[in-house]
Image (cartoon, rainbow over all chains, first blue to last red; front, side, top):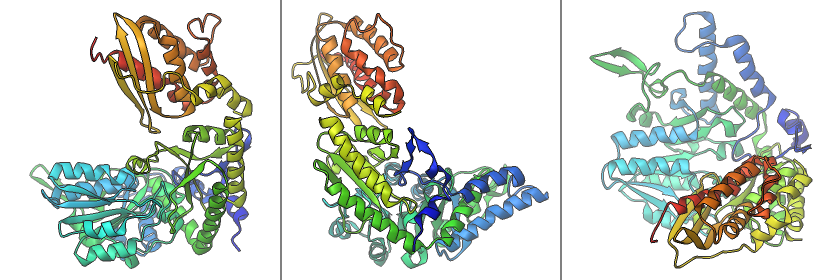
Length: 406
Length: 147
């Protein structure tokens, strides 16, 4: 039996008050809360282990380096990567995609080539490719989204061609909750030699990820959505791709030898990690991974599915509310709009009752344009949310209607 | 923040303006025009003005925005219609003070209704919603299309 209460007890923020009401945190797609073990690991690092890594010969620095590098192995195991050198620490998904798009612009994309993304991408998986295409003369192609919020897979097949140099696709839509069939999409892309980057910002917190089973070429994560601190994330890349891409940033720590006659770089992953990294963040990430490894992820997913089901049923009962994103395969994210109440006003009303949701375009402006709405209200659930959270959301929305209409 | 604060924010005058905004729609014969966006949330507003010999004769707006933004635009346009730039700038100063909660007895001479925005000080994230029409109108005044 999945014991939500004992899980909630490990997340200190969930027992705080917001506007004099118990906090109901439903903005997990934006960032997740952190268990005590993560918070304590970051604090302990600064209290007992703080020093720079890959530099000092003193014991303190050696210990910090060991903790940092151990996380690489732990993460490789977490996503079933073949080698820990395929794990690059970055700031998050945005930096990971920028790293890959920069490399593609520098050494792969040529005029007339194509990069294929979808209409449901987060801006972080649109703008870097727009820039890479502008720089190289490549063309950005976009897989359309159907009315239910699923991808138009027929269009995908016709857009995929020998000209495609990369398919860069979101696993779970942050705005709609749609789970894309990425395994079959990867198979189709690979059948004509097209590599695939998967934006896993929303999927890693919701499901187990096995990069070898998916056979994706890149998979990118943000730590802060994965119960770890902000400012840390992971780029997984197959060894052959990481070898092929040039360094993204340069400077300290990523070099082998610097001379005014020329510089040689470290091998992978070091050549992508210039400067002092977010050491405490990486150590916090290791605790978050350990936390997730102790959790029964299948039960956690089933619990999130139950939250989604109850939320969908509850919201569907409210007159004037329309769900945006009703695909069959969905993670625990619900986006909705009201006929006559703007999403911001919904957000402010719920906040007064201690309920935190996201309102706006969720960094997916082209997707909202496709659905012809300027903004949505979005509630996104994590495994530490409970059915009471869902009920409070639905009841508050009903009260809100009378507040604005009567 | 509690339900009283919510009622202070969404005073009935603001809710009425947001539901039935004044001067809503496109002004075909405008001399000044600007669009404003709130990049944080995607709110968008267009403001049309017809200014003749320094007098703001006709006003209108269209928006895809929240109740606060819509009410702010409606009240603003009603207040500056048939006035001039100077009146707008002095009202704009007054409005900024009201949003920061600095209300004095002398305020509201030009529009009692703008005083309804004082509840916003409890909701800092909503201040930009109220300001967007004012900033856009300011830009519109600098956008002389034909005088």
